[in-house]
Amino acid sequence: QVQLVESGGGLVQAGGSLRLSCAASGRAFGLYTMAWFRRAPGKEREFVANINWSAGTTVYLDSVKGRFTISRDKAKNTVLLQANNLKPEDTAVYYCAASMGPGRKIFTPLSYDYWGQGTQVTVSS
Image (cartoon, rainbow, N blue to C red; front, top):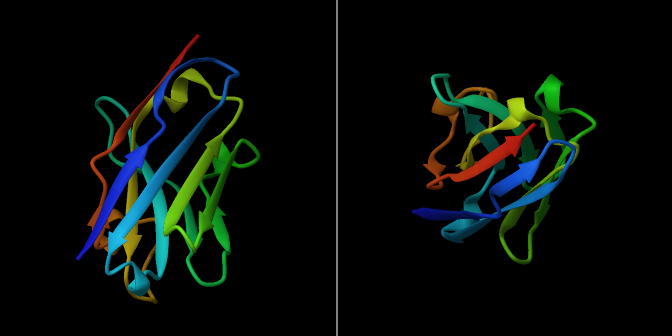
């Protein structure tokens, strides 16, 4: 089992920044990739960014490229999402997710084994 705990959400004005953090505990040595998803009111859960735990390679949703940065601290078993130049359309509950195996479609929620409880990000115009 892996437990994921997010923090760092909040209310920010358009153009502002937030840093989301996700701490993994338990069998975190088995992590393969970690990701951030988000769900806006009335919408499906949406892929935001993914990072390969070992190699550090990253993938992003097109609409956040150049604004968001995903990174990991292997010593602390933590994944971060630095979100800059936030827009009202970024408003959502953001979820951290962990996958324990290779060869999965990283854009699909079903590919992930563990999820955090979510943290609210609200961007005012």
